[in-house]
Length: 111
Figure (spheres, rainbow, N blue to C red):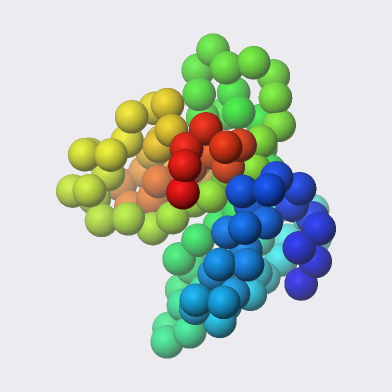
């Protein structure tokens, strides 16, 4: 795994946390997307998280043209309705919006 593909401090801390708490390393699956990776569950191989670098305008209307790192997490649909605020927590970017949320890892939200 090449942790250096992600540069934000919050992203680096998250990568270390998942490795130490859950023993899971990132998998870089797409040659055309070197700054996108997933974590999989050990028991069934399904993704539980996706890290990627995107332009913030893809998830936040009216945002400046700025590259950010994001975390997509699988989430219960009834929880998404309660926490998606379109400032810090968004419905899943490039994922099923009923089952995924997106967090921007630029320090805007304390973890």
